[in-house]
Image (cartoon, rainbow, N blue to C red; front, side, top):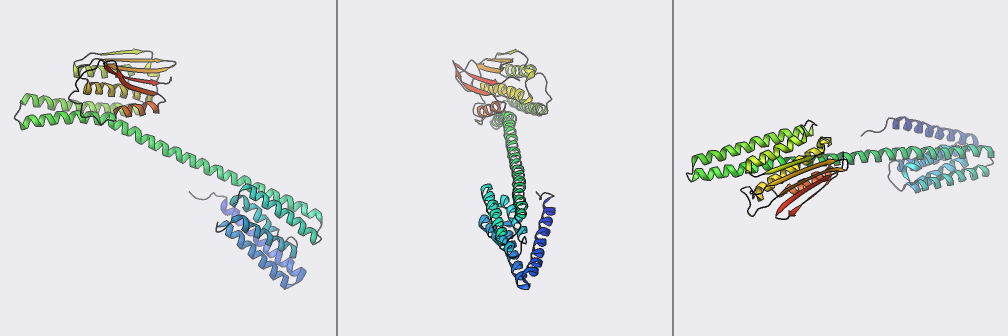
Length: 367
C-alpha cells in the first residue's frame, strides 16, 4: 500500500521551512556577531536537523533525541533571535508521530517554556513570545489530530483485513461441508456397490446381481450430481419450495429403504434465508443417511415448524439393532458438519438417542 498523496507535499513544505530557518539563522548570526557566530548557528542547526532525521527514520530513542533537537533550537535562538524556531516547530510537529501523546505534550510545554525564558534573557519584546508559544501549541495539536486520523485509518484497515480473512475461512469451511454433504455421501455408496460388484465378478457370482449393483452405483452418482446442482442453486439464491425439497428427500428414503418416512411442515418455511434453508435440507439429508447406515429397518418422522419465534426441525427414527451395508462408509464428520452449519445461521443442533431410536433437532432464530 503506497503512501498518502499528501506526504510528499508535506515533506517539501517542511524541508523548505527548515532550509529557510538555516539560511535566516546564518544571516542573523552574521549580522549580530560576524562569521564566527554564523558558523556556530549553522552547526547548531545542522546538528538539530540530524537529530530530527534520526527520529524520522526511527533509528533511536525518539523522546530523548527530540529533546536534544529542541535544546539545539533554543541555543540557536539564544545566539541569533528566532533563528531556532524552525527546529522547535519541527520538534513539536514530529513528536506526536514518534512518541506517546503525554510525552509530546510534555516536550511541547518544556520547549515553549524554554523559548520564553531564552527570549526574556536576550531582552526580546515579550509580545513576540505569545505568538510563538501559541504557534507551537497549535502545531502539536494539528500533528496529534493528523496522527490520530492516520492511526484510525490503519486500525480500520486492519479490522477490514481481519474480516476478509474470517470471510475466507468461513468460505473454506462452507465448501468443506458441501464436499462432505454431497461428494462423500454419493461416493461412499458408489464404493460399496462397486466393491460388491467386483467381489461378485471375481467369484463368478450372479450376473444380474452384479448389474443391479452397477445400476445402484449409477443411481447414487446421478443423485450426487443432482445434489451438487441443488447446492449451487441454493448458494446462488435459486431454490424451489423448501417443503418440496424435504418431500423429495422423504420420498427417496422410502424408495431406497422401503420404510415409512412421514413429513410434517407447519408454517411457511420459505421465509428462511438461503443459508438457513440449506441447513435444513442438509440436516434432513444427513439424518436420513445415518438412519440408512445404522438402522436400515427403522421408520422416520420429519417435522418442520416455522413461526415468528423461530424455526425448529425434528427428525426421529424408531431405531434398530444392526447397521446397514453403508455403516462402515461414514467419515465421522456428519454430526460435526450439521452443528457447524447450525451455528453459522445462529442456531443450535442437538443429536442423540431418543428412546429406542435416534433424534436430531435443529433450532434456528426467526426470519
